[in-house]
Amino acid sequence: MSYAIFENGGKQYKAVAGDTVDIDRTPVEEGAKIEFDQVLLVSDDGKVQVGTPTVGGAKVQGTVEEHFKAKKVIVFKYIPRKRYRRTQGHRQQYTRVRIDKIVKK
Image 1: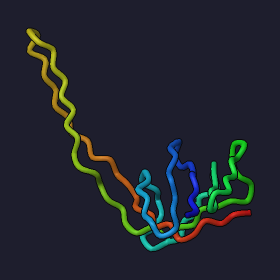
Image 2 (image 1 turned 90 degrees about the horizontal axis):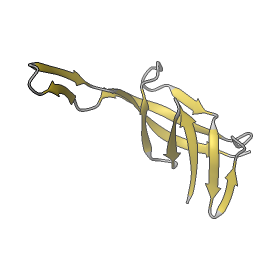
Image 3 (image 1 turned 120 degrees about the vertical axis):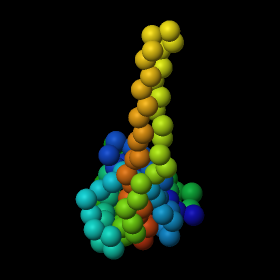
């Protein structure tokens, strides 16, 4: 099984051809091709290439499937005996990318 570890937006993701990855929202239209060139590691049936810091010539190619929001997270601040209560909600925006192929050098 071949896979790659790539970086996008300061986070690292594992890419396997045919799988989907949820990354932070990117301004790319749905159905468009996207390419990640910050590949940190490539594994191909036991052969592992580790970059210093990236693997030269390696890329992860994918297709944007959809943009969506995660479930709401409630943030509640409370200080006892001071009548201080604050409630706030947050929904993180993500982009779902289908990994088409991993290009090695």
